[in-house]
Image 1 (cartoon, rainbow, N blue to C red):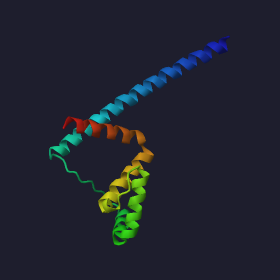
Image 2: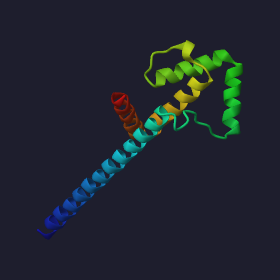
Image 3: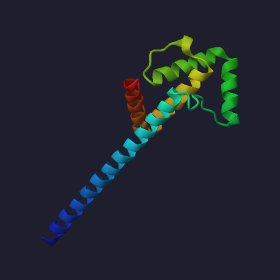
Image 4: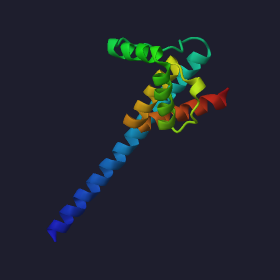
Length: 129
């Protein structure tokens, strides 16, 4: 009988912990969403740049080589569009599009909950305009 009580107590503690963890994740997600909305507003108002840059020689070499080989760049861009469930539009594929899509595909695969929050914030931002 005491084993049943111990198991029930452990089960309740675990469930409470899970609820607390879920609540903390929801709060964190809300704060992250608000941060995205604030930055989107700053970008819309011209208070923040729309560009993103990073230093990485290997990636720079890859992107430069893709630009020098348009057929391969088109293929990579089309694959990325497909990966993200977008309609394939080869005319839209250029250096920036390949980088945008690659980052989005990587984030979608590695952190889908972050992408979901980001897309939700983007939709909210569009509704506010």
